[in-house]
Length: 95
Image (cartoon, rainbow, N blue to C red; front, side, top):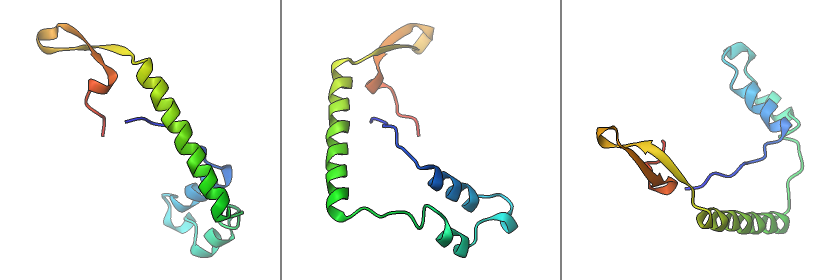
C-alpha cells in the first residue's frame, strides 16, 4: 500500500470546513454550498480529465517502482523483547 500526497484547493477546504461545522446553526446550508467558489468552479472536459488521470497513474506507478528498489528496513521490537529488523511492507497495515 502506498500513500500519495493529494492537492486540495483552498476553496474546497473552506467549503468542507463550513459543511462540517460542529454548531448546526453555523453549518453551511445547501444554498450556501451551491454559491461557494468551489461549487461554481471550472469543470474539466472529459479528455482533459482522462489525460490527467493517465499521467497521475503513471507517476504513481513510477514512484512505487522507485520505492520498491530502495526498500527500507526498520527496527521493531519482537517477541521476548529481541530486536528484529523487518521490511516496511512486512509490517501490519494501520487501519
